[in-house]
Image (tube, rainbow, N blue to C red):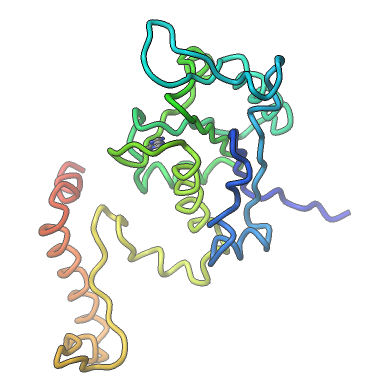
Amino acid sequence: MKKTKKPWTAHILTLFPEMFPGPLSFSIIGKALKEKIWSINLINIQNFSKKGPKYVDDKPYGGGSGMIIKSEVVHEALKKTIKKIKTDYSIVYLTPKGKKLDQRRVKKFTKKKNIILVCGKYEGIDQRVIDAWKMEEISIGDYVLSGGEIAAMNLIDSCVRLLPNTLGSSKSLDSETFQNNLLEYPQYTKPRNWLGKRVPEVLLSGNHKKIKEWKEKESIKITRIKRPDLLKKVEKR
Ligand code: ADE
């Protein structure tokens, strides 16, 4: 009997499962979902409250604004999810307090077959369940969203496009931005002359060696101007 390989799967613990797949059903990510290159497993945190769906959160000890999602509810939801997966997973809690997501971390998340994404709402979730499960706390940037769902979508999109067969050509991954900590060189298409602005001559020359050199030089140039912090990372290596 033919063994079907399980796709890379995002297991999402959320209070708002209706938000998914949402934008992830469009473009190359949506196509990959239809083609079962990846799959989505939605877990509604509300179903794991013993007292009923309204009792998933409570006021923070010590005072403060907002409500905190209870440990036990997230714990039960995780137990059930992991029982099904068994092995080969990362558990990620999306939070502005986490380590910043970058291309290196994205790549790492595609190496395991499953990613469990815990989405918080309100002021967050009880720290004890984060610690008990050794969740990896990940932020998508230094700004605060109203919940983890959009951050989770962001992370899934960046992972799925790296999965084998999602993009038509893996060549486009070789030169893209953040490969080798450089921003990608500028790109042009027809017409050669648009409003008097001409495409750099070298790109029309057909000289592959010169074109390659130009691309590398431009990459370094724009990285130096826009993101000198990335070049520092290259120098450190
Ligand atoms: N939840 C709220 N803000 C967030 C952020 N910046 N990154 C990840 N999850 C979040």
